[in-house]
Image (cartoon, rainbow, N blue to C red; front, side, top):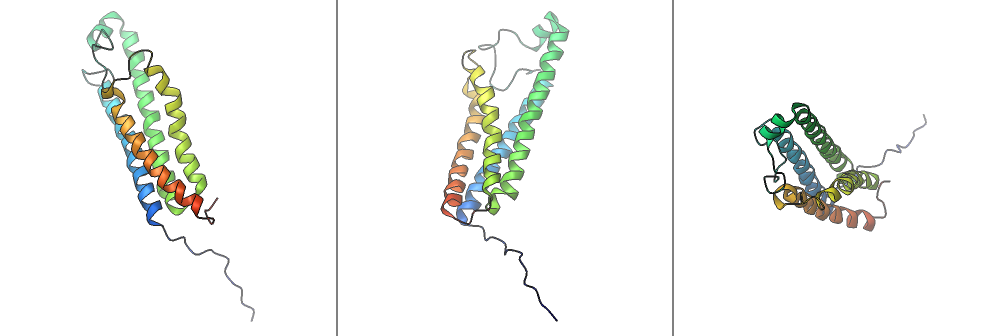
Length: 168
């Protein structure tokens, strides 16, 4: 009777740095989702405009937009809905990559988890500055989530690069 040895690798034991870093990244991803929910809810309230955007940045509100052009109001609303959906989707994707990939030591998951929000921010943030939409009330929660995310990413990246056995 022949016996074979199993080639199934033993599960990797999570390091404290990966656990802490991935937890920070997860908190930030949940922050992205929370921001998207706020963004969506404001579309359906009298606030209408994005969080942190008021009369100093936009000279009219929901009622004036509707009065000026109902179709423009609906168009802006559809953009709010779409943007909130993409922000939430990015948050979900990052959360899944972090929790099921980065936490287990997969470098490819860290690359994906970092690339998705970075791409979104690189595209979205520059338009905020020339139009004076860069208020702390508007971007503050995103900045906070990014700082938490970067701290978690640094912890994880240091651990993954130090560990020559990082799963690719």
